[in-house]
Length: 217
Image (cartoon, rainbow, N blue to C red; front, side, top):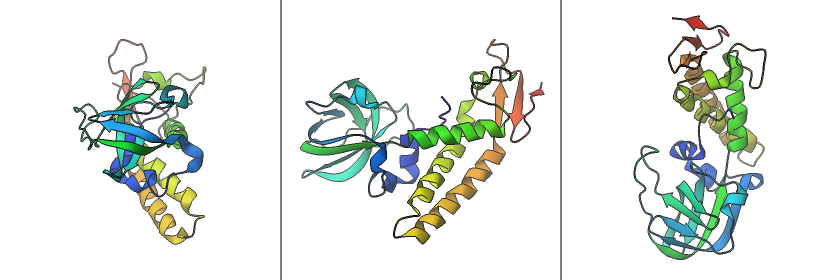
């Protein structure tokens, strides 16, 4: 796995990517008849587990008593039940309950494939090839993956808008893609990842963007 960000991280910057501009080919689950009570969202007959829904996903909800909005999935509690929350400042904050509602329409779309693609690209920038048995450094040796999150977010959003540039509003989408691509490149340049080669939990050195070489302490 080379995913350094989640869908909820994308929601912070571009909620419309889960509303108007989502990709039908990347929808994990959708339907009607859901019930939202506190932080619990349940749908009889759904199977969120088989659909691949996980913590960090984003669910778009709409009902007569609920303004259409995207929320984050905090946990998958069973095949038919999720814990959801208003978007939190930090991913480990306590869930915040949306307004309760019945007969809720729902949709869970994801950018997981793009996130993996961007993650693999980031690893190549640092000279780390996932699954390369001949490499001295493996992705599992990274001990501060969080420094790659911002670059991952911007890279995914840029690709999403680039894909949308074939739509009617192509110029708008192209400008958005270019804007986030610039942010991605700047964030990538600032990254320096810490490496633990011997597995003792201690930092053995670091890698800067494009060096492809471990800088030992």
